Image (tube, rainbow, N blue to C red):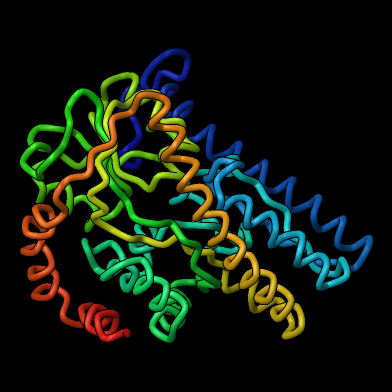
Length: 351
């Protein structure tokens, strides 16, 4: 018997039944749901000779990335004259970011949008994007993502069953908290801050004196309500679209990281497409990324306006205080990961 299974095997009302309800039933339900989805797609494909790729993600429908991916799906169908289609399942309908990434690895779903901060758990090179104050400014970040360094980084996941297709702008991540304003890193002392499932993200919060708390993005709103966490960190559109501004008091624009979203496809699915189909898909994705950048800029302005009107206090701290506090973290990363730090050197050389 596995070590995670309860010892008291009372299926009527004991721990065993609770374990089954919590762990086994949801996963079985998801597997069955995916089976029926794939069956439906297969029947559709056999009827009209088209191919359908399942794209699942965790974003809200109104988020700029979500809107851009729907545009991408429309473009793919247009460019392929209906021969290639994408069916989208948003808002964690098929699982959390981590679960969707695993499903894409094995080809159960075709594509997913993932934060580079979560992707780093599978693709080590992506850890670099979670380092604090990596880029000089947003222009420098865009040059990296759109240039050779960014393109090379997208292919780092191929050996892990995942091929990066593009980056979506996710801006800079900043802190937000309940009950306590943050003007300097020392103000985080004792606060439980939600982070992505990222070792670097956890180290970052620890380095500033906070207590990192890994938690699914979809659970964060209720976690604030229940006092499970005291704060989190994200970009303005995500802060707004998640409605987290309804349950926090302060948004601190320290902009400690600039972590992109990454659209990835299962190697199995990609290799199952012929060159023409790959061309249709990549063209649609590239255009959706350009469209998303426009949406992103508009969304940042709208988001900041709405959260201010909602009564959230916006704080503009001295970012140099945070840079100084986090500098040892960069030095330690260089010492511990000399091979990965070569990516940092390449990024700093981009002009």
